Amino acid sequence: MSLSQTQYQAILDSYDRIRHNNQMEHQRRKEEVHERIPEIREIDEKIAHISIDAAKYQLFHPDTDGRASLRAEIYELSMEKINLLAIHHYPTNYLDDIYTCPDCRDTGYIGTEKCHCFQHRIVDILFDQSNLRDLIKKENFGTFQLDYYSDVHSGDKALSPRENIQGILNRSRQFIDSFDISPGRNLLITGPTGVGKTFLTHCIAAELLQQGKSVIYLTAYQFFEQLADYSFRRSQENSDTLSFLLSCDLLIIDDLGTELNNGFINSQLFLCINERILRKKSTMISTNLSLKQLSRTYTERVSSRIVGSYELFHIYGEDIRIKKAVSSLD
Image 1: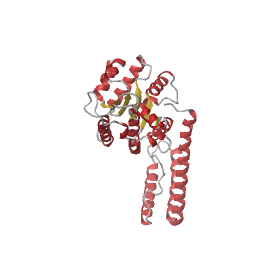
Image 2: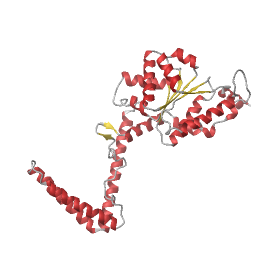
Image 3: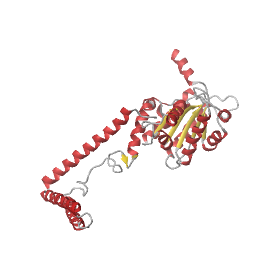
Image 4: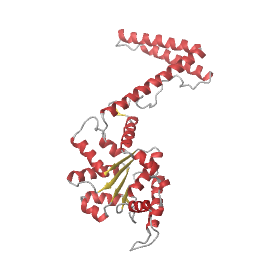
């Protein structure tokens, strides 16, 4: 979850480029308007002189408020400039400073806190590191193949594997369509190895990413490794780890149960899933564990929070990896 110093510096450098480009565009607009509307050039020169006079006045008369008349004069000139812009069919804000992110004015920070635009840049880098961008090009709803699921009923199952997965796909679509309408819905995807649990998480992630949502995908091992790094080896590079895990629109924890379980794992898992529930942020967990195994593996606080707050998608059928391997030999 942490960034290298090189990645961190690359983000800061990108803000330098944004500010430079916007300043250049602002200067181009100013020169264009000055050439087409000489009266505005004169107004800008007057405002510059008045601003200098105001600064001098404040320097030599710090305890007086004689700048009020100077501010009023600047205001009147600014209104005159806006009128001239409108008369010549320019937007009234055409000569305002240009910011890609008005909230932080393209600095990346609001005070001492990272701006939301900075945080999105970090999430994008972390997303690239997860290799999910390449995976969802191959694994999405468009490439999901129902043919790998049998339409034969067996055992005590009311639905065939194909009927079951079709229902799960429909519910997955509903989850995506209602993501903004019903925030904070959580999914627990269970089933044996090779039935398409991870594939389904990629399908859902792909759709939400197209909607501009922030998605963090981690295997269970990566998830707990990042939390341990944050807890025991705190640094500038990983200082935002917990914040990202708690605030991203969708957190995906894949293959829960494959990690080495201990007290730290249980406490951190509860902290994360409970806080995200309180914040109404969606979490999607996939696991090979059954609900009974889940309750035996984790503390009662963890298992009851998951069982009580997550919608269950149970996938069953034959191991698709084996079927693919066999079909490739034919």
